[in-house]
Length: 421
Ligand code: HEC
Ligand code: HEC
Ligand code: HEC
Ligand code: HEC
Ligand code: HEC
Ligand code: HEC
Image (cartoon, rainbow, N blue to C red):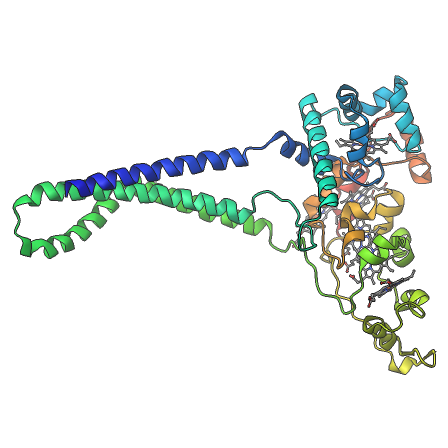
């Protein structure tokens, strides 16, 4: 019996060690690296105008930061590019003119360290993108790197909590067994099963009596349930990643990506009205009357229009419109206008819809929550140049607030009635 309890003690000690190591490794792996901090800043402050590998409103930052290696200059530029331009810094003037003097937001709230982290992230991500280009991963689809998934994190936390409980219980068991062993040394063998029976109840009672243990279990339970509830409630009705199967295998990757057809060619509404609108099949027919006429997918277009490719005639009585499945859908209580964002504010479709030109099937890229709208309104500077409406406002305000920053929020972009009917 002694050796039995010794084994138990050793066992629980090694469990403790393993858990200790797991916890250490886990926290080390999860501790935010500089690049991860930089990524967070980049995603929240820079993605509206920059991509790592593509020119958006501003230059593609991967190649740009490979060419420009003077980090001191870059930090100054990112914190306050307008000061550099005003001081006629030759590098700053060159890039400013190259991008038609579009002008970049200033980020005086970012410390040197923050900006350093962003630069580290951009260079690391550019290296990753180039590596993936030279050796695409097997299986074709490039899995997005997202770090440890939530499931893994919660799994690990669960394992750690369970392991602690196991240790506590084992310790109790060892203590009870040892006491029993010393008490029952003289007991006759026949009585053993009865003792074992009593032993179980004693153990249960002991556990329940141990207020610390009960408290610990309750706290763990409350934390787990609370976190689960928090995450679930915040994500109710958020459809990020929603990707329905469409009736025709139409690919944006092919048409907007490879063939570089302008978004405006099909979604012209986005520039002049509230809705971007889905193009009518007649737009497809501009090409598909002659392109890929043998494809069964293209025949779906013909059938929907009642078009007979042999006689090249339309029979409107046979037409049955394609029912595209809507991907993005705000609740009716919110008002969103495309032209205000695309035409007036000059925001690229990709800032809200993601890299549509690489999507075989469109999915919802942004959460479309109220928080998402508001956050962008709070940080996006309004570009008033060459806009009659703003010219008039600016003229009026010029005397009072010369050169002061104006955000959508200032113009009423966070007034309830602007977004809600
Ligand atoms: C409102 C749009 C906008 C935002 C937001 C923005 N930029 Fe820019 N950025 C530009 C434009 C436009 C240029 C090109 C120069 C110009 O026109 O002023 C540029 C240029 C740059 C350059 C090139 C400087 C050089 O001399 O090589 C860097 C680096 C840069 N941005 C980094 C950032 C970082 C980092 C962030 C986020 C913290 C950011 N930008 C956010 C629009 C933006
Ligand atoms: C050749 C025509 C064509 C071009 C060019 C095109 N699209 Fe589309 N787009 C469609 C069609 C058809 C659909 C509906 C089917 C679907 O969802 O795939 C669609 C759907 C979408 C949707 C989802 C709409 C919803 O249901 O919520 C978005 C977002 C979108 N396009 C954005 C873009 C962007 C951004 C570009 C430019 C990079 C672009 N499209 C270029 C034809 C086009
Ligand atoms: C500017 C010309 C053009 C327009 C407009 C256009 N397409 Fe295409 N589409 C093409 C070309 C070219 C290909 C074939 C590429 C290839 O050779 O595989 C193609 C391929 C396709 C295919 C794949 C066919 C297959 O079997 O491989 C589908 C489906 C398709 N288009 C649907 C549409 C739909 C739906 C629209 C309207 C929303 C549309 N296209 C508008 C030029 C166009
Ligand atoms: C500021 C963010 C933002 C920008 C920029 C933006 N969209 Fe949208 N888009 C949305 C939202 C939000 C919806 C959902 C609207 C709704 O349900 O009323 C949407 C819906 C759509 C739809 C579905 C049909 C419709 O009209 O509602 C298409 C297609 C679309 N966008 C294409 C585009 C294209 C093409 C561009 C660029 C020219 C673009 N969007 C720019 C936010 C944006
Ligand atoms: C990528 C940044 C961005 C996102 C995301 C965004 N907006 Fe905006 N929004 C702007 C900017 C910039 C303006 C100012 C445009 C201008 O110059 O008038 C604006 C203006 C507006 C206005 C007009 C305010 C006024 O002055 O009358 C409304 C309404 C609006 N947005 C609604 C929405 C809603 C609803 C959403 C979310 C579904 C949304 N926006 C998401 C950038 C954004
Ligand atoms: C920039 C646009 C914008 C502004 C400004 C705005 N909202 Fe919203 N609001 C939204 C969008 C988009 C939704 C729907 C998405 C969601 O539920 O998060 C929403 C949802 C809501 C809802 C939830 C309704 C429901 O039943 O789901 C309430 C309540 C609300 N807003 C109240 C307000 C109030 C009060 C204000 C003013 C202080 C305000 N909003 C200002 C865009 C906006």
